[in-house]
Image (cartoon, rainbow, N blue to C red; front, side):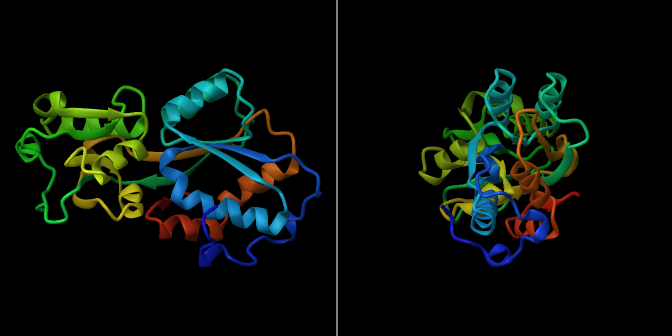
Length: 254
């Protein structure tokens, strides 16, 4: 488990989170980009309530499909409105519990700490920067980070030039790892992912108007049958959790 962070170390949970001792685990399906911020929040909840939080991290697309196939998750945090919409259309969301939790920023990262800073804008020569190397991205047709990245590059007129050089990964953290290890000299990830990996360096930030807004909706799922599930959902929307999310670079929306 990750260590407790100061904003959540003690004691952040009020009497409203006092729960029976034998409740089931809280099962959370969360976008891979949530890991660094969410692990300490879950650990704090466990320490204060005695209820375990089991978190499955993956691409939002994969998680949504698992939920629709009957996977027993209690809470879903998606990095895409689209995939939460699919889960809601499938009847898996408890009415009245969905909310837009967080926002994020899309950035260009490099493995080389001496890589030059760039301004992603129409005409910036990303293909030239790659110089025959790979551009790491999450799956461009299904994973939100990859979809946002492709949309941004298309808006800026760069997609056709770089598409042959794209190395796709199952999720954004896997794309980040390709850059961290040097397998790809550049990659497109969220700002929060870049902040969590010291072996990559942000060299540019994509304009907000070059892609759909990065929004993380959260919702309670119909599988949830315990007070602990609702308590953890409430914690995610609390001021204390908001401080922790903001410290990791997220924009708090609610």
